[in-house]
Image (cartoon, rainbow, N blue to C red; front, side, top):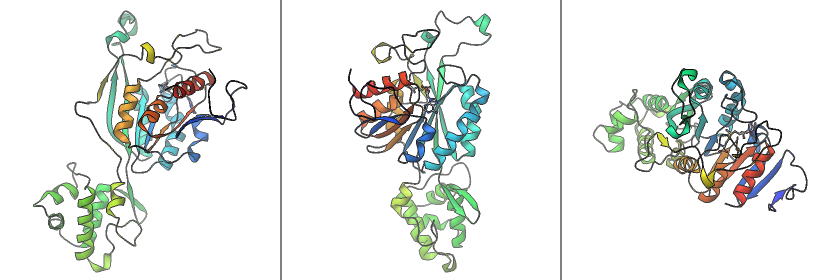
Length: 348
Ligand SMILES: C[S@@+](CC[C@H](N)C(=O)[O-])C[C@H]1O[C@@H](n2cnc3c(N)ncnc32)[C@H](O)[C@@H]1O
């Protein structure tokens, strides 16, 4: 098959070279290390990370989970640098791999939302797991952990989270907290939800935030104005506030247990890799079901938003992004996986 539209690479005429890229509309798959590309990619609304697991599961995978933190840290730092408060991260890994990397994600400003479990079902191990040798229950799961890039607000030399900052700004007005209810035209919900210091706190929807900011700037201590401002000149607008948290929509009936067998049938990409001891008929040992990638992208982005898939493999994110009208930037470093991903996108 002659693959179209390669910049610097026509079909299979020459070997791939780092820096090659295949683009179909706004969906681009790079043959390069992701760390070489982040700075040139548009800021992501969603990042799908499906990198090393620490189980020697595919070429380049770390051999043990305990080295995963060091491996991921530079990537996580780059994600933090280029993400915005609208960005969602979906972090795929084994349970212990994720547990190892979790503190590094937190330290770099990623806020934990939920651990989604891919349950592959009993068929994943049927007839193939000797529990007397394993000495544990057979594992049929991976996780796809949901994080968001929490907004932070600079106050002097400190950075506050949103809940703390809202309370800080209201305190600066000198007004009693209960007047937040008058500001929003409600009996007690505003103080109880938007300005509380406990775990029952809610993000004020843009309209409510606008009312709080207007009230504070009208009635608050004149010496402290502007209130609810990030630049010290004017309050954050309702439109800006709407972009200060990650997008999320959830269809009815979806939970954090995602059930599907290992990818099989016509979705499973077949092929062989050179230089491998064993020739697998499935090209990639860690191929993800398109339906889960579709779920994650739909939940966290809108049409036109940018999806990153730094460790592409067979680049399911590219196929889904193309179908859903999202922009996409992905990377892969193994030639056979890259070629298969390009062919998959080109023919999707
Ligand atoms: C777990 S697999 C991804 C599988 C993919 N989600 C799928 O469904 O096909 C991780 C992939 O990341 C690639 N990889 C490892 N390090 C990379 C890097 N620094 N930049 C880009 N890709 C990398 C590996 O070659 C491997 O194919």
